[in-house]
Amino acid sequence: MERSVHHYSKTTYLILCALFAALTAVGAWISIPLPFTPVPVTLATMVTSLAGGLLGPRYGSMSMVVYVLLGAAGAPFFHNFTGGAGIIAGPTGGYIVGYIFSALICGILIDINKNRKQSFLWIVLSITAGLFACYLLGTLWFIMSTGTGLVPSILMCVVPFLPGDALKIIASALLIKKLRPVIFKRL
Image (cartoon, rainbow, N blue to C red; front, side, top):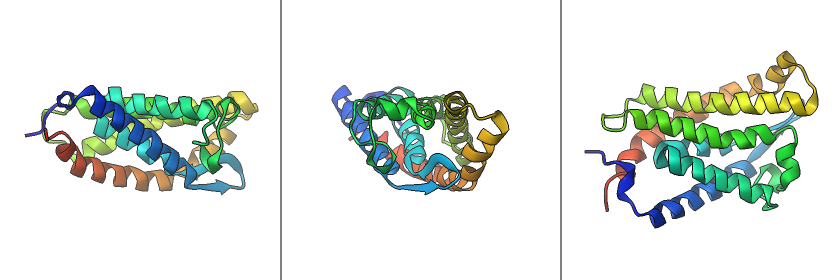
């Protein structure tokens, strides 16, 4: 039987938050720049889904807050080993801040169903909803910081990423489905 996330100590969860903040940085470092947009392809969005799905909404989003704050303070946590408040204030900053909401929404939706066996479809939909929040905040931020219109922004910052994000959603859902019962067992 799956157990609630509240069976670990706070220290354990803080360690897991730090681990997922570090994993997000590694995911951001694995980036592919695209010539038509300042937004690179990274694995960070996959880690945000895993954080929300495996740690739950509170600790999953907390791990992303740690990631954003350390990166904003200058740690080279963002794509291409960059960091600093300038990255957050720039055109990709909304997507980075959106990681917090992505993990939060993914975690909330998966936790709604936590006492029952998690269906793969529900996990996929939960991850998709979290990613949508990241896209929404990031695209609105991009529009405001660059003055680009809505349609060109969607064509530059959303559409090219959909095929890869579909693969990341499936991979994340498989990992969450497999790891969540193991993580929630009391050791």
